[in-house]
Image 1 (cartoon, one colour):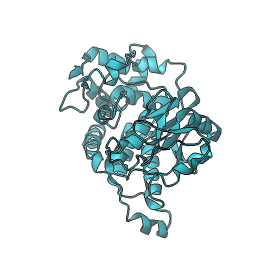
Image 2 (cartoon, helix red, strand yellow; image 1 turned 90 degrees about the vertical axis):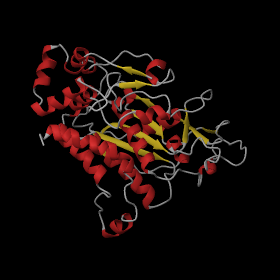
Image 3 (cartoon, helix red, strand yellow; image 1 turned 60 degrees about the vertical axis):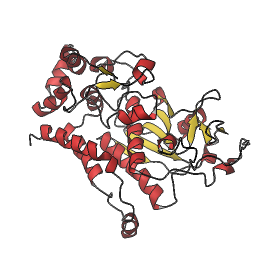
Image 4 (cartoon, helix red, strand yellow; image 1 turned 90 degrees about the horizontal axis):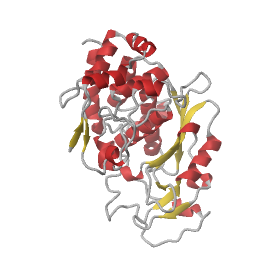
Length: 359
């Protein structure tokens, strides 16, 4: 295992910059906010922020050499996107089944929406009406290795392009069905068109049992699907909603939406914006930003850091979201939010708020 360590001077330049106007912008943060950000200058095992650990050559950083993106290069990138008064909504489009009909499916998607709204504090996050696989008109296949159904990402992105509302900052499609980008590829977790503000991501492989021979999603027969016959997706298996699945789903959505702002893969500190080549590496990433990436998001949305952390902590500590009707409330009481996997993040958020609120 190798630790990627940068000097205090390099981390400070990556966070603050040497450019006068960006230094002045940094000085406008409160003393408490600067204190929090500068915790990242001294990472370590017991500190608020950690070094990046590279476990093998199959990890993202050695496999995909990239130029690190500091705050200055992000801020001056002409291709980065900033929400505006007319484009300030993140839209989520579900594709296909998300579990048992009714409350379980509806609450899971609503939990994702609420989490994204807290994470990208200050923006509105809305759900579009769910669509079936058939409604997308996408190409699909049976994977010869896993014997699971897969749908083609390019077709889904084209579909999302037609569905994207005029006030959208971005639109993301999410599905519990496995994905592939082209015939020669085995699978892909997701694909995005950043310049068009669109992405599609699958949570199928976030089920702990996905790679098991007994995985319930494996088709029992060798089938040759006929394009245009979407009946194969009727009642197709979707994994149960567990705390780990919810955690992984939140992490993936926020990472990919982060790219929509122009935030590239992080190579400074352990961060949700690190790239990942495999599930084990993804699980190693924390649930939130390092200080350098946090500043990138903050300057894009202009939130108060304490307000954002409070919203995230509230989401993790509340079993249920407010119900709109008594009938909905009674139904939802049987479906508590599974947040056990978020316990480490809850403790981390409280430490951040201790600094921001000087408790």
